Image 1 (tube, rainbow, N blue to C red):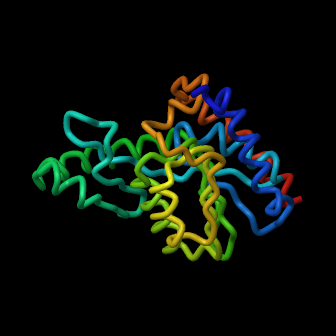
Image 2: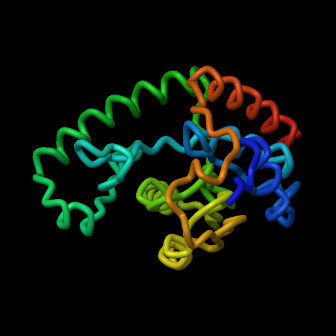
Length: 221
């Protein structure tokens, strides 16, 4: 099957079309998961005329198979562990702890790098559109949702170009709305649904977030 999206920006524009009812609302903010979710989120934020910020979450990869998530963490001490994966692969607690230590250091590095002097956007009482370039297992997204609930977001909308039906079914009850442009049954990985799935680098993330701060100023004008 041919890829549905040319690249992440193309996916963001298509995804934004599914979110038009949230355009030009002063209480709507867009949060994107780095790195790949940021180009998608930037297109969504532009289309909705909404402020853009980053949602810092890190996947805890299975030792020896880092692409497979055994859990995820977020700023503020939030953690989700996928017990099914951990128990089926018999991953010892010390491996989980080591992965978490490593990823927390990376969270701190990225927070300083991506935001610079810009404070996190306030989400108390806001409608948050939470964007990623695709959702394979949902581990990182679950932690992001948990974090937003603790910060008193009024409404959480998860929006992604691609997710397998199983993830959609599991996550719909956790949020107010779940939008996936395509929900292919033969979902092997996010990258298979893109013509160009080149890794997004840190400089690109920083520039898109800096540009997103201008959307914020316009939206609040």
